[in-house]
Image (cartoon, rainbow, N blue to C red):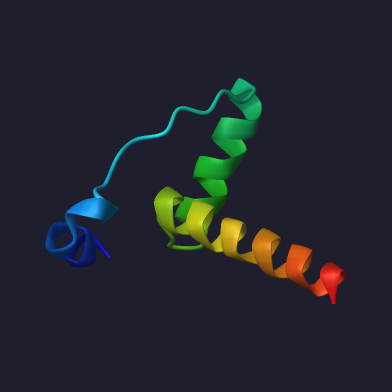
Length: 59
């Protein structure tokens, strides 16, 4: 994924700021570590799931 961003300047990697309760952040970090997935990948997969669910409801 990083290689794609390096090749396409319009897809530059930037940070986002999210504010969540401390315990929720901790639970997310632990879950990701237990499942061997980075937090970035978990965020991306979660976003993909939300988008696909939304598209299913439109159909």
